[in-house]
Length: 177
Ligand SMILES: C=C(O[C@@H]1C=C(C(=O)O)C=C[C@H]1O)C(=O)O
Image 1 (tube, helix red, strand yellow):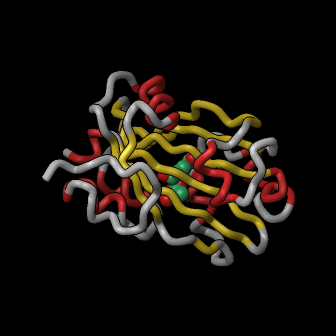
Image 2 (cartoon, helix red, strand yellow):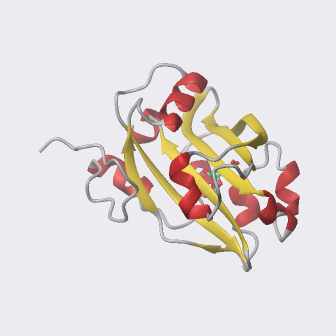
């Protein structure tokens, strides 16, 4: 049966192709897993600037459409090979109450900071297939060039007390080899 792109974020990853399911459901730091699996790991920082969260992110962050957040986008690389397009949304309130150091994250992987703090709790992972109708597909394509018609993504919140950020990871073809 063809894998139908889910049009919303769902919890079982069972609709994703088997090759990507182990990445989608990996509970620990994606950075650590990529470093263990691929050589010359690095973070290519695309942007970290104030902007509006995507419409399908407002509920997870309990934000109004008008509220700005610090949006961080990176490509996790192995040498010159793109592996993962990551999009993280950090509301002002989160940066003021707990996550202040993330303002200057630079090319240090977010996971190195988040997983180093035992007080940070990760929410359940949610998954969806995305195609060019989704803004993150278009942003990933703008960053790395032509992509297959459908990609699989996962997202979760990282909570530190009342502070909450939303991290979305889009898996690129090189992770499936
Ligand atoms: C949350 C993690 O951090 C990774 C690194 C990111 C970054 O540097 O912006 C974003 C998402 C993740 O793929 C992780 O390693 O699991």
